[in-house]
Image 1 (cartoon, rainbow, N blue to C red):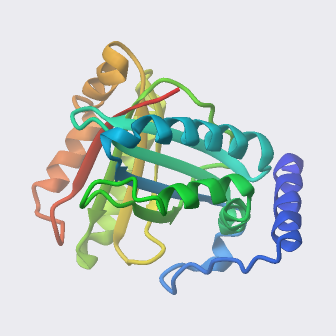
Image 2: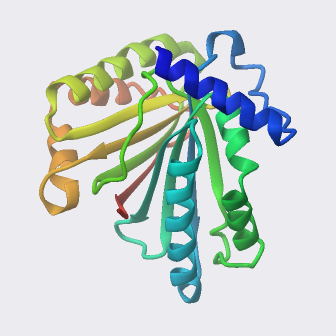
Length: 246
């Protein structure tokens, strides 16, 4: 608890010293209940093949500096799509939205902004971002080899409570009963009610694919499939698979 308090204080100092305005989550989010909770970012984009090495050099430097220099940074994962070369995914976690605002004021964040403005993306491959708060505990997550999964789900309002029960059971079963599951976090979008965003990581053979395949044959995943059969979505889920770059 003391460690988390120190991190929050340091984060607020960074925000103050840079004259930042803290990003406000949408009205769908109760900010009073989210103080100090993990603030998560999922990012997807596709770079031109000719800019691949530029990107990899920049993003590894950005990852290192973010984790080393920002006290509120909890995680910075970079991965590449398993089927589409040069399509990349980033997952970041910070202590509160204040931590993310502090991140955006750092010099290395400016390097990323300059890269984005240099036309490095293929047509239709511009960055897509999702922001959400997690309910898991605040903890540092190392850079590691893993099979990554990003999911976007939009739920019908009338099945929201059932969804939360089923997906909570899926998360609990994954973390407690799957030895190859490294991480399973999710939360509701800060900008759209009933839109839920996920980040999962698995280990094992074949770059972690073994862990993901084992996940799909568990009883808690079967309960999820039973729920899916009820047609609970307002639009088809988006599932992206990648391997991390460590």
